[in-house]
Length: 110
Image 1 (cartoon, rainbow, N blue to C red):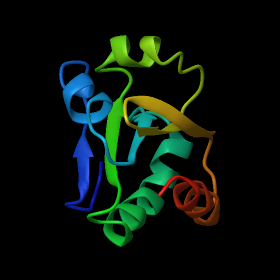
Image 2 (cartoon, helix red, strand yellow):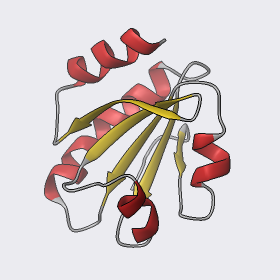
Image 3 (cartoon, rainbow, N blue to C red):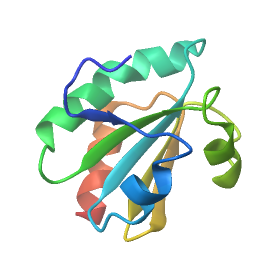
Image 4 (tube, rainbow, N blue to C red):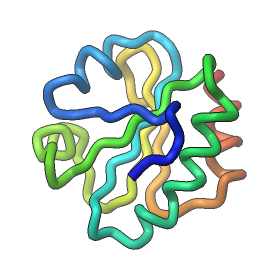
């Protein structure tokens, strides 16, 4: 679903090592194929991954294929984008938000 080579894939098996044990700011998009707002948000996340390359890691996690992670983080609606830093969720945005909303939240935690 991602068009940017800078968007990585998170799964139930790699979320702990790739995201939670990572010290840098990481953005995780909880999404699903059938979700229209998720598809609409994808180009924004691609652009953010490219613009913040080397500063912020961007992951997509398909909730249908990785239900354990969605449960663990109490994801109730998608798209939900969580910002994780030092093993802690430091912020989250729910729904298809404008790019400026993501930039504001990212800048707050960099």
